[in-house]
Image 1 (spheres, rainbow over the protein chains, first blue to last red):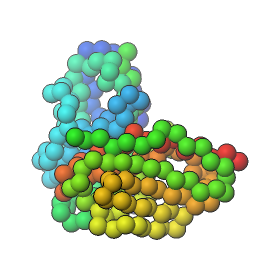
Image 2 (cartoon, one colour; image 1 turned 120 degrees about the vertical axis):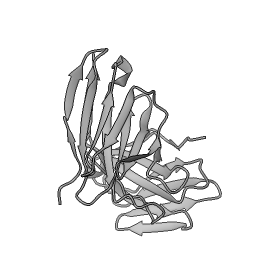
Image 3 (cartoon, rainbow over the protein chains, first blue to last red; image 1 turned 30 degrees about the vertical axis):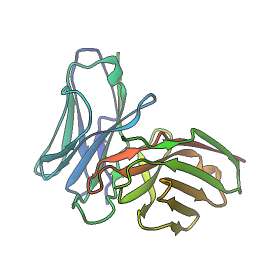
Image 4 (cartoon, rainbow over the protein chains, first blue to last red; image 1 turned 60 degrees about the horizontal axis):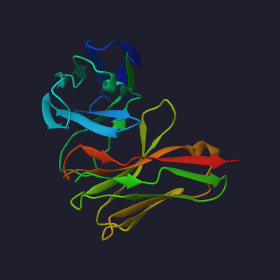
Length: 116
Length: 112
């Protein structure tokens, strides 16, 4: 069973550009969550999608956006990049049924973004 | 508020037990989790515990939960060099959601 696939694994952008990151969840998983990991702030929740709908959003500026497609694949976009957006962006998928027990998230290896 | 705290670093000798501690804040959390992150990799779920349990054992891993003090610990028996990694505890914020609040992470260094 394939795991969570994130592309690209590494990318370098300059300030002011925008970036799109992609996440393919485990087959059959309908929920996708995104997290940002930095040395200073640690792991922070960005957003969560279930059946193409944003179910939850973290405390990030509007430059951070995402979406989920009908096949459960998800993308996140960061516009007008700032130096502080340099981070490891992690995607996680789960079956996504709420109120049904432990939310077992399976994480991808991440996309490492460097903003120069 | 959302604040999950862990000690930053733990060093143990191979074969000893490791105990990683965590304090959390949200009393409505239904599940608490332990994740492991190796260099250059994503997060790997190690184990989780339901909030009405005191203890859960899973092979070399033992999780203890003190709900009154909002304290969670992970004990790794017979620690191996392959256990060297960063360990994160996490809680479900507000219960029924996939939003996890992660701790600051504990770097476990296992000396041969």
